[in-house]
Image (tube, rainbow, N blue to C red; front, side, top):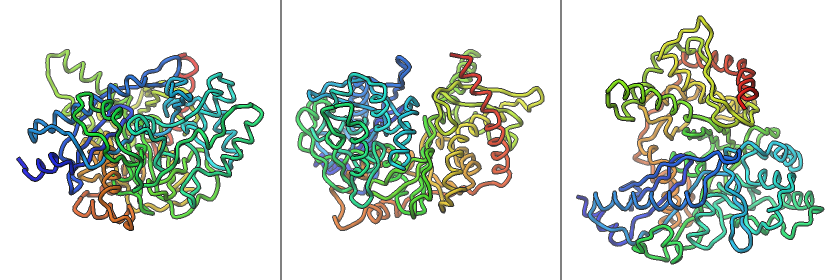
Length: 531
């Protein structure tokens, strides 16, 4: 047992980070070298309720507490200690969506997550109003859509935030957001490192005749950049996180960030010409830009790094969910035959077969649209698999199809950034469940992007580690030291081998990509027919 780590835990020198993801909540405890020393997790899933993808706040707190309890158990088993204090805390969560509250803190509507493609009218009108891309997932699009629909709750709004901002608010009493997370709510003024006041004025003017007793600036969180203090853990917050009462109050908490920002930090991808791809339930690519894009592209999010640099983001709502369902089905087949194979082995075996399939998947085609997909123009989705009578229908080709199709919507967005805007990226760093099976995710992603793909040894720790690093930067860095410089020190001993694109894989993906776009009317027919 490492006595130095025991001492750090006992004296409160460690740092705790938690990320509330779309399918998993994860917690990480890091030591003074910023190395993960314990972790906890809790699995959950969103619910389709009244046509809306959502999570209840009771589910959120049950998940957060269960995840934290799991972390405590890991610490107890590894170090025979109770965790009572830490140096700092960081809170992260899935970006975007719609959480609104009245002046008494009552939630006005169920949580509308990023997955709901229901704000097309608002997205289009706001993009035109601001001359700036406002994707359907953004909080401001959800708010404006509610205004257009004249939903009665809008008049009662006192505060609008994201999931990370909500949890942070309940733990600290502070209504704040990190700038990266804030940039997924409303456009940012890069010079001021704050919400764009000129656009706020345009919004308020556009809705002035509605007669609401609030203005937009008054209901938005305050924006903070990496390194700033975002409050401390209150007595009420400590009990919400740790019902046992062991956790001390007064712990500093960094600005809450979204999963996009923590993914950039966890892969050291916040400098220009760097990029990362987070691939799990959804998949998104974040490319740090050297300059503004030449024109407005409604398909591309313009967000920021946690220290306020401009990022072009291509986001696809669907990635691994459908092939997760297929692998679960194959697992049931194996179990029905009397065999017992662990889930990780099942995934590795089946996904590994994808590398043995034909480069273009042998003519097979599928769409993993669990939900709608804005990059291809779908407000709803229907998972679909189709083949012609002469397709090469093998397990290898089937699994390769599942991986290829999970990246086609993403590639549609990347075509804008890479082919039209000529954004330069030297290497893409991958993280998320898509990359868990060694080499498979890297090779498939390299084929889809035609860019070398690297997976760092630490990438598996994901956004929980990323937000812990941001908390570390707040309390441990020289305040004159930029986040980029601080992360270079954190990652100086981190290794990750880049997998270069295989020309035959690239050609095969291009052929499959063309088939995918040609077959989109089939997916539309499925949506129209299977109500």
